[in-house]
Image 1 (tube, rainbow, N blue to C red):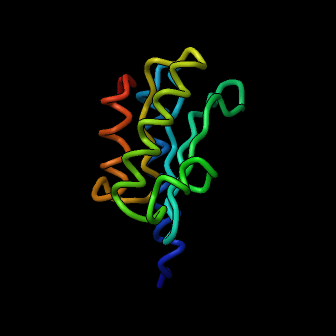
Image 2 (tube, rainbow, N blue to C red; image 1 turned 90 degrees about the vertical axis):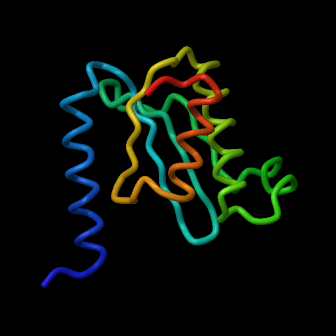
Length: 120
């Protein structure tokens, strides 16, 4: 019997496997969410480096948000990661939701990143 962490890791591996098949050289927009905050990174897997990052933990984000663990915070992080990715010269990414369902905060971050100009 697998526990919840093992099942989550299995879903994340399955998601990343599918992304690698479809990536075609594009960087990966990876999302991590905890109970209190949400984090996003644009990662170049070929070069093994992070091109842009944003989170609800940052000082300027924390003073504008009531909490970092809601849809409003995810929307702001999505806008910020899109802006920073464009500054880094990235216009197209593949969305890595990890083991999370495309729902709620993860969906809000993705939609805000699309509105900010990222294509995926």
